[in-house]
Image (cartoon, rainbow, N blue to C red):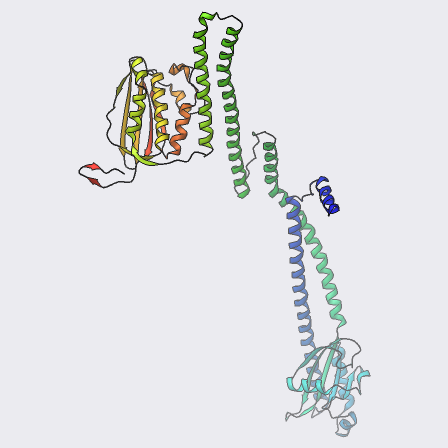
Length: 509
């Protein structure tokens, strides 16, 4: 057991297993498929060639037999072969003429010919070495019953090697069996033919494999090049380089993959840039109040700030600590919201409840800046949303409006209902937002000091949090502004399903 574990551990330490590239695997797969296809094709070709050869030889042998029978008929008036050559002579047949006719037929066809009596005894043969031999009764019966006999063999041992053999019975005018004629062709020609065919096939297959291999390598490299480029780009991503892109060539699936990869790469690059910007903004936002706090505390400790002024600077330190607290809370809120850790608890309630609660809570700040409120006419308007999330959105927007409303200015609320949605607007007079800054107001840590006269105590996260919360609530948020006149933030919330109306009033849900 210990040795086995040690061997496995050593195997892992020895390095990762060598992986075959896609090119290699594709080439091997193509080669195996091609070889199997060629082998099947070769088998079919050999089978068809053998069948063709046998058919051709069979036809030739039958023709030879027919010619031999015709020769015998021409040599004798009745064309009948008796049981023995002597009997044929006694019957008045010219055996020599019969032999001469069969010999000419055999030589012309290049075949061996055997003439037997009705019992299978060879009475005539070309060459003569087979004369006197016996063809088995089984073969004779098969020939007589089928009319034509064919086989690849030795005709019951008559031939010393394999022959392709055909046979036919000899019948008289009355249809009576008189004997048999067998013709044979040496099968060595078939072997030679198949050997030549096989050699030609091997040569052709080798040439085909060579050409196919070259084409396969070229095509494989062409197909796998985009994949290698994507792999190289992915490795660069792993090393922190998000600028790598893959060239897009053609319009096939690989081109689509390259486009998808480039889109993903662009998104990753934006995310990385956003992360870097976020970390830089966090560092800046934390550094500024920390520097202020440290400077004032050091001044009090080393006596630079006299005791009579310390309370004033302690108040500033307290404000900066409060700013740090809000900043950290906002960052934690964003982290939880974007991570999906907050569970939205949507209920049906009156949106004016949240607006009224926020306005009453900001009453002292409104009075201190002599800000007027308009459009504040609560009329029961139901929404389907998380009341806590919506309260935080309204709070952030009202807080923002108070900060940037001019002294003696106005904050106006609007609530409108359409089919399936409720739109809430918070508008304040003041400097407004520059047109070029509008697309960025919901970005994290964005501060547009120049156009808004923004006080620098803000974290730059309030509006971003509003956007995240509204998205979680199933709505959308946007801004409308005219520089030097006003700024208005608007957002939508889902309206609850329609309820039956009784007495002209919407039934509570």
